[in-house]
Length: 439
Image (cartoon, rainbow, N blue to C red; front, side, top):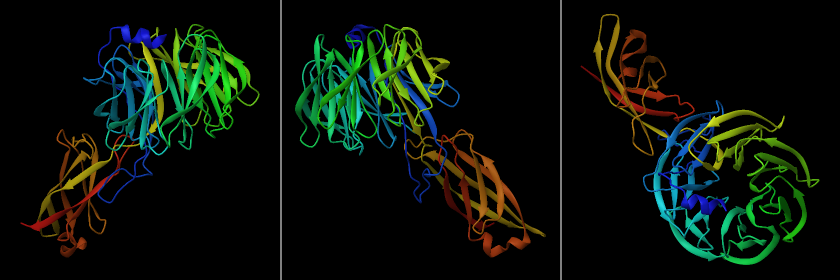
C-alpha cells in the first residue's frame, strides 16, 4: 500500500496549500472582481509542497512547514481561502492561508492521517486516519479536532456530498473491500458498501448522485448510486488504479493507474472506458482545473506532474516538482487582501500653482502584515485629480511629490489626498486617505 511506503520513506518537512474566494471590504481588502489565479498544489512525500501556476505550467514556489512531515492528502476549502494537508508521520493537519501561502497552524489529528476533505460550508474538515481507522472532525473556526468517528481499518480516500450530509471513506484493506458512509449531522457511520478488492480512493459527482470508487486490486472502478448506496456498475481501468477525479460537468472520471503508468478516462453515463492516456512513472493522484480543460497528474517515481488536455486526451506538458509527489489539488486562488496606510503631505504655495511634498502610502498584506513590494500606488486629490505615482519599496512604502496647477484649488488640496493600489492577480486592491497641510 502506498501510505505504508510513504510512512517508511525518508522525508523532510512539507505542507500544502490551496485556493480561494475573497470579498472586498471598505478598509481595502481584495475585491470579488479582482483577477484570479488557478494554481496547483502538489504534496511531495520527499518534503514540501510545490505551487504550480496553471497558466504557465511552471512551479512558482515551494512551501515548507517545519512541523509537517511527509505530506500526503490534499484538500481545499470551498471558498479557497484555506488549504489543508495531512502529515502522515506527524499525525497533524497543516492549515495554510492560500492567498499568502502562509502556514497558520498544525492541528493534531489521528494516527496516520491520509485523506482530507472540507465540508461545502467550509465549517468542518474531515481527515481519514489510516492507522487509527478513524475520521477526525476539525472545526475550521477554532482549528481544533472536536470529534473522532470510528470507521474501520485502513481509512484512506475520503469524499463528501455537495450538500455536506454524507461522507464516504474507502478502506485500503486487501480483499473484499468496503466504503463506509458517515452521517455528518450525527458524525456516525451508518452503513458499509461492498465495492471491490481494496478500495483506495473515492469521488462524488458534482450533483451528488454518484460515488466513484477506485478498487485497487480489482483493476476497476465501482459506481455507486448515492440514494440507494448500491453499486450500479463497474468499469475496467488500468493496472493497480490509485486516484480519481471527476470532471466539473460530472460526465467523466479520470483514474490514475499506478502500475500501468497511465490515466483511464471513464464515461459515467454509459459506464464505459473512453481512453487511456500515458503519463509518467507511477501516477498517484489527479485533479482538474475548475473549467475541466486540464487534468494534472502526480507521477510518484518521476518526480513530475503530467498536464493532460481533456479535449484531446493527450499530455501537453510535464512539470518537474519535488521528490515523490503524491497528493494534488487545483483551485482558483484570488489576490491576497491588502491594506494601505497613507501619511501626511505638506503643501507649498508657488507663483503658478502648488507643490505637494511627501505624498506617501504603505502597502501591506492584511493577513501577514508583510510589506508588498514593487507595486504602483497612485495619488489623487479627493476630487480625483491625478497628483503622482510611485512604486512601493522594500518596506512597502510608495512616496512622491506633485506639482499641481492653481485651478485645482487650495481648498481641494487641503481636504487631503487619496492613495490607491489597483490590485493584480497576487495582491488585491486597496485605498486610503491621507492629509495635506500647509508648510
